[in-house]
Length: 69
Image (cartoon, rainbow, N blue to C red; front, side, top):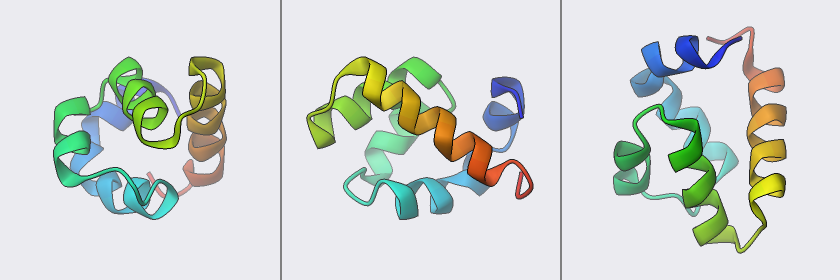
């Protein structure tokens, strides 16, 4: 799954994103609105992880959910 696919399905993905990262708020997800860097930044903020760790979590999420979206 490429990031363009995620951007196109962002609204449908927000439920899965909230399941994975429960501390992200609706506002966080709305602000990120399909932007990978913004999502990584929000994960960094809420979970106190480094940028590389946030990006690895996003990659893992994409791999786990490629069949859904």
